[in-house]
Structures are given as structure tokens and as C-alpha cells.
Amino acid sequence: MISTLLVANRGEIACRVFRTCRDLGIRTVAVHSDADGHALHARVADASVRLPGEAPADTYLRGDLIVKAAVAAGADAVHPGYGFLSENAEFARAVLDAGLRWIGPPPQAIEAMASKTRAKQLMGIQPLTEVTEADLPVLVKAAAGGGGRGMRVVRHLAELDAELAAARAEAASAFGDGEVFVEPYVENGRHVEVQILADTHGTVRALGTRDCSLQRRHQKVIEEAPAPGLSTALDEEVRALAVRAARAVDYVGAGTVEFLVADGRAHFLEMNTRLQVEHPVTEAVFGIDLVAEQIRIAEGHPLGTDPPRARGHAVEARLYAEDPARDWSPQTGRLHRLSVPGSVRLDTGYTDGDEIGVHYDPMLAKVVAHAPTRTEAVRRLAAALERTVLHGPVTNRDLLVRSLRHPEFTAARMDTGFYDRHLPDLTEPSPDPHAPLAAALADAQGRSRLGGWRNVPSQPQIKRYLMAGEEHEARYRHTREGLEAEGVRVVHADSGLVVLEVDGVERKYEVTRYGKQVYVNRTALTALPRFPDPTAQHAPGSLLAPMPGTVVRVAEGLTVGTAVKAGDPLLWLEAMKMQHKITAPATGTLSALHAVPGQQVEPGSLLAVVTETP
Image (cartoon, rainbow, N blue to C red; front, side, top):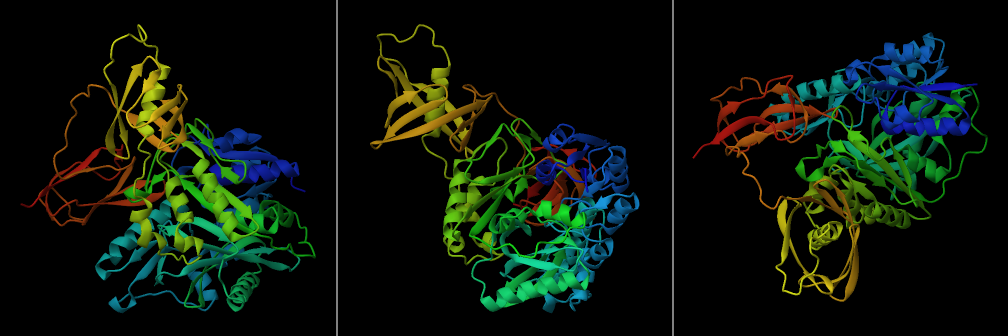
């Protein structure tokens, strides 16, 4: 029996595994980098071990340090979570060689399936070795991992070499393995997968299907179970293929077999030899704990004789600290508050007051709703996200709510091209026009006023706020009856709550302040000074860092004086395990280049200047 378990991971998945361990009476051990010294997963574990350094290559990808930590902490088992070393056969062997239990499949099964190239060969599929114009578009893909890292769609042959280089660098950073391969890219298919559970006694079970078609940068955003709209024949086919793939490698534990479904056909993508981020939707539908099943299988117990029965529908949304309207750029800063209604499940690695840094994935949490029907589950999740209190960096929350309510999604007609088609509409700003006034009234009531009301007409008070990138003014007056504003009736105002009557309807505005940052319900505002100081102006054509990160590459041959065209890639930033391409804003000449490989930059740092051709 397992008594103490170390999770070789961080954040949300570490907290998720620890929760099951507590239910089973198993002691827990966390590992943490220096950047994660005060992270939630390190705080909630019974014990934790420091991995010196901050970058994944120095910490969570150091299998030798993690095995040493497990032995030192007295653990008798290791759970890899997902990402990092979860599909690394050598790490699994090192765990076993140290006399510890490995909560995962045998190393030989990982070797057979964790490399996407070998997995496809096992299923009778060969990757592309030479790419021609006739093969386009193609997908460059990391052989040793998933989660969208090391993946690039190539539509022009001239871009292939650069995208191969970027994918290799990203894969090496995320998984410690830079191997990539190329395969045909199927446009606008559906991403469907099957959850596998296999024990050491020969039982292999396919626990239904999931649809994960809503993706950005090939990383899933919204997932659900079961996959809607599959024909009975196609549903049976993908489940049978998944069982066949598992049996082909004598699989043990939890795993996922992924397919791209297009034109009524299922195309094998890969088998992930680990737990998936989206596993909670399967847990909700089948009423099981997949982590508990993983642990029982590792202890040698057989799966039950009666397979669990599916009930209802579940939908999961991933909350990311990112700005979808700015090329999904990751965001950093303090998470002041995260509060989700109790009607849904919340899996997170953050709590109020935690800092969101630059070193790791920007996912804040997963929110999961379960209901008897798909329509009810989708509605419940959208409403819960809408009511979520989320104060901190910019997130994709509004995008998720709009996605869940989009006609294509509600009708289950979505595919992997959903955001390519609809992102501009889904990210169109729609701030509440009365939010600045509510913020100003709350601020007025929160401050003491010298002299109080006087029996003379008062001048309007003016406060300025930045909202959705634009400046807004709020005007109000102090009168004998209280606060007044044009076009509305102020029903109530205190420092935390304002009630305004607009067109005969009373609306509540909860107001929370963190310095200059103000939140009015779901709308974020920044209070502007009454007399703004002059600020330094950047020259036209300046390229500013959109996020904190590291300059990993500058375009070959790029120097001051180089002629560039609008959209040409000039340099690449790495932030939160992804590489982000910075392109020329206009056609002209590179008149300044401040970025150099290895340089750490902050948001707004001047990287380069392109002087536009007249």
C-alpha cells in the first residue's frame, strides 16, 4: 500500500492529486522551484522539497533531483501529473530503479506511445519526411509532449525552416526533448478523444469520449464529455481503436487516445500516456476519481467487474491569465481574488494574493459543470463564469462566456477552426458604460469630505478612468439629498456597493479597489490622476514587449538598416513556456534594435524601431 506520494509537478495538477491523496489517507510531498516557493501546491502538501532554480530545465525537468527529493522525503510513490516529465520513460525507470512505485504506465509503453512518431508508426501511419507545396498545410509537432507546445501550422513552404526551429526550441524548453515531426494538417476537424483505464490483470476499459475542439494555439480551451453528435458507428470505432492502441503496448493506468474527426472519419493523432488536463469531465460523467483509480492500479488492484455507467453531460473551461485580443499574450501580476460559485467544480493552483509569474503555463484554473443534459451543463458553466469574482491580470473569462453562448457551440457544430473564424467578435470590448460612474460614486463615499454639503450649487466632480483601453469621465454632484448624476438615479452608494436606477431598472454595482485598479462587477478600470504628468513618447514604429519574457531569437541577418516588410518576423520572446513572434508593424527600415538573445524584458520595453517607408 502507498503511504506517502510525491507529485513531480506543480500548480493545479499537484493540488488536484493531493486532494485525492488526503481522501485516501496518503501523505503528500511537493517539489517546488524558487519561483514557486510560496505557491499553493507547496503550501498544501504535508512536506515539500526545494528544487534550486526557476526555469523548468533546472527544476521540474530534472528527474534526478525529483527522485532524490522523493527518497529524502520518505515517499514510496511518484505521480508525474501532466506536462514536464509525465511522458518521459527514463524518468519512470529512474523512479522504479529507486524502489518507488510509479503512478503511470510501464516505461516501455511510454516509449512506444509518448513519441508521437513511434505511436503513429505503431498504428500504421508514417509522418512526412519531405514537404512539398502539394502537402500544405502541414503541422509541425513535438514528438515528446503535448499541450500545444512545439506545435506550428505551416501554410507557406518558405516558413517551414523557421517554424521547425521555433518548435524545436519550444519543445526542448517544455519537455527536455527537441524532437519534432511533420504531418498533414486537417482543416476544421473536431478533436475527439477517448479516456482509457487499464489494470495489471488484463482489463482495458474505454470510459467514453470527450470533445476538445475549441483550441487556441493547439491547446484546448473548452472540453466536454461525452463528445456530442457522433454517430453510433463512429463512437464505437474510436473507442475500439483506443482499446486496440492500449493493448498494443500492454498499457497500464490512465491514458488518452486522441483523434481528429472530419467528414465522418476518425484520424488517429496520438496517445497521451498520462492523465489529461480535461479528465474532470470524464470523472463527472462516470462518477469516478481517476487519480484514485491510478493509485489503486499502481497498488495492483483490479478494476471492478462492473464498468461505471455514464450519466449526464459535463463541460470544462480553462481560465488563463492571457489577453485573447492581443494574440493570446500571457499576463502576469497579483491575483487579488478568485471566487467561483459553488454550483461548479473548481480545480486551481492559485489562491487570493498569489503572484502569477513568467516561468510557467498561464492557466489559473479549470471550472467544470455537470448536468443531466448538454444544454443545462453549458448554461450552468457560462452562468458560473459570468458570476465569478476575478480580480487580477487580464484573463480569457469573457471569451469563455461568449464561446459557451455562441450559436455554433450551443448547437454542437464547433470544430478546431472556431477561434480562427470568431475571435474578433468574441473579443470585442463591451464594458458596462455605467462602471466609471459607479467607481467614482463609491470612491466619493469612501473619502471624507471637508465641510460637508453647503447651501450653494456645487460644481460637478469629475473622475477619469481607463476602461477597455479608452479614457472615460464620470461626473456627479453632491446635493442636499446626496449624490446625483445625469441620466441615472443614485439609489444607494457606499464604498463597496452602488445601486443605480437606469431607465426604471435598479442595477447593482459591487466596487473593489486595489490601489489605482478598480473592479466594478466584471469590469476592470484604472483610476487616472486628475493632472496627468507628461510621459515619454515612443517614436512611431516602436516595437514594445507585449509581455514579460526572454528574447530567445532575433531573425537571421537582422541589423540596423535592414529593410523589412509589414508582418515580417523580427524576433521571438519566450514567456510561460511558449514562444511569441514579434513582427514588423510596417514596411520600412529597421532604425533601432535593442533586443539581444538572452535578454530579460518587461512589458513595454523597447525592443526595436521600424521607420516606415514614406
